[in-house]
Length: 483
Image (cartoon, rainbow, N blue to C red):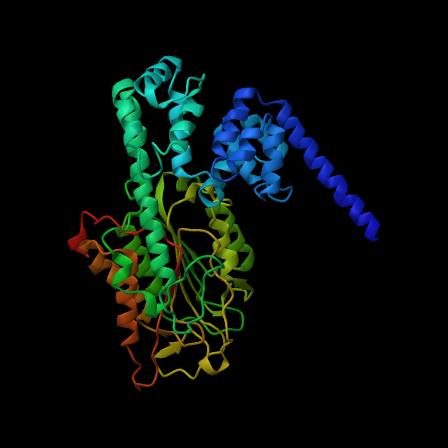
């Protein structure tokens, strides 16, 4: 058996290398130069200088663990950039699939992309003039626009933080390229802010709170949401497309054996009103079975309206267990299964757009309720010690849970749940003040944590988790004063 497996592995590797040879045979000398240029900083310069063919470059990528049969995306990224998109088929990629994954898996830096873009816009006459302007400091050799820019970089005339020399050349020779440089500076500043924000988020103490986010992403529990989340330098999500987006509300009241969720209609009504006020198109689904839930998820993930929307909201009002929710026919659905339908890969229309999930659900066995208050979470003494990941391993997700894992959440049988009512009331008050969503959720935490039942013995603390890269600030509705 061992020898058969080894033989199979060898055949797979040979087959993969055959595909690389086919790609090599379809690339010209200028394409090889482009590949080598794009790999600067990722592959040692000495190795790149000795490469005379695409297959040489591929060997270096394999040696540097930038390319393998199991993960060929970096090569797909290179082929996409140099506009050899027909060759993507040999790596089992399409142009659309690469575009979806670039924000997540892309390795080529903003600086490298800028230089490559400039090289494609510098024609032979432009190049001669630039070389003339720098004549004293350049070797007397024939150069292409790529080799010229690579030389400027090698001589430390330009780097990602210093483009003065290049700007001076463009001002004289090709002024229109200054727009590319200005665009790069804006994107670099935004990237720097995002990195600073991620580091700040990652260094905050969680005091042992269970994490809801996937590996590699930073979560925010109630004790980590503070004024730092709304710092002035943080970039904001775009909120000026044709539509604000879709808001889906799953409202389960009746079940087979579980108790009716009295008061849930109040939550559904206030959610509909507030999100319509914010400009969303709202769809409500009542008493949704497991099969119906899957249909809702499939319909919404492929909804063409996402392309023209700014944002997506999904609200679930139901019973549940730890890290999962119940359908009306009492099938248990993991929260992660729901959120995973809306990743960039599954739902391209929502790529790089904020996706907000608000969940008011029981979290297991009920505690003894008071007369007008019912529990929507499990008894802390029966709580598991950890919570499974509930949001995908990628950016732009926010999950708002009515309670921290293992603790009770309450729903008034006539007035609705503490969490949803507080969320909607704070949206109505704080959106007109231009507060971002994390600041609003912090206020919700404070409000809900101060509430107690009539006996003064039951309290609640909501918990958000997020992988947002930017501040999310909803535009102020024109009729802000009417609510």
